[in-house]
Length: 182
Image (cartoon, rainbow, N blue to C red):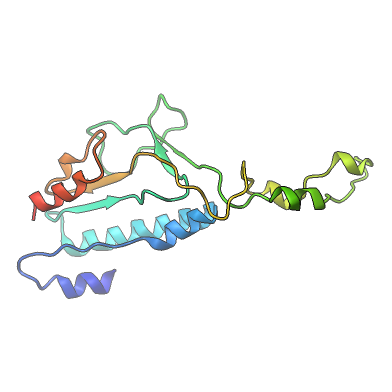
């Protein structure tokens, strides 16, 4: 990211840099929550680098991928919110980060063939049929990759045109906002 900005900053007419955070999406498709959030932090660092190089008068828009395995922001931040993202623990205090089930569930055949180890406190092996690793990041249903969820896209921005990012917008409106401000 830093090298891209260094090369593009010499263009007197400005520039439009589009960065695809594909590692975040791939981790979400595997239902790897920890890796997804780590890649989200890396994206945040990349945006910080872009902001540092571009300056405060530049426009920076960050849009979430529409297919991140069901990870989404439920609810809406206050219209005048800026700076750090607002995350609440309940719907009354603001939006919350939610996660849909992904691919780490066992197939019905795998569940039928596996048995958990018998513990002294539970001598009945038929009562403990669920393998322990299936409970680490369980999925409601088996899927090869996390299923896409129809949900609103997350979009944040600062600078010229960022005030147009509010409420609910059609996803194609992002392109109109960029074009209007070039």
